[in-house]
Figure 1 (cartoon, rainbow, N blue to C red):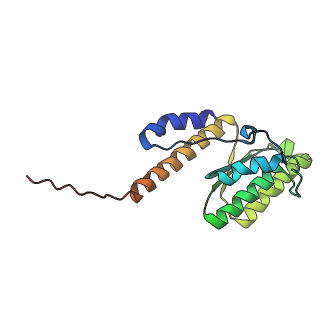
Figure 2 (figure 1 turned 30 degrees about the vertical axis):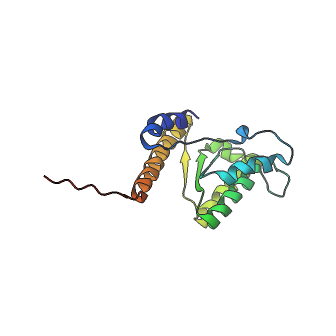
Figure 3 (figure 1 turned 120 degrees about the vertical axis):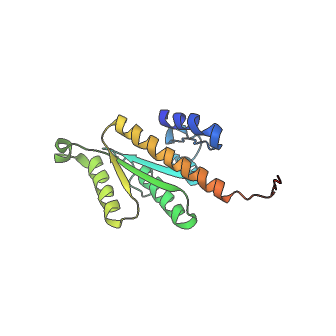
Length: 166
């Protein structure tokens, strides 16, 4: 959240671009399957950021193995159909000792990562710790915001021509 707030302070006033970070914990309470309530935000986002380490999550009650899996598949399907959202995946490095006896949760993360590597549909990145994650996210956001700003400027049409005669 700090990185997003920092990015907004740096670019919002100059470029008019605001990044709103919405996590599952920001979803309003309500009646219905909890994951369906979270999916409303997933279905509305322009950028889906999936960050995984040792936990895959819990089944949300619809056949998916975790809430993350359901969210990822929704984002991926929407991307294929509409071109949005952009999808970023990042995996925190897992040390060799933990990998020797990963447990079921980490096994599912490892399987997902392997599947993503095999299908080659999404370029994902790895980070070592919180400081590395923040630095990488800061850089990615900056580049993405600049790209968005440049695209907006390029698509702006000049409707009036001013001639200067000297």
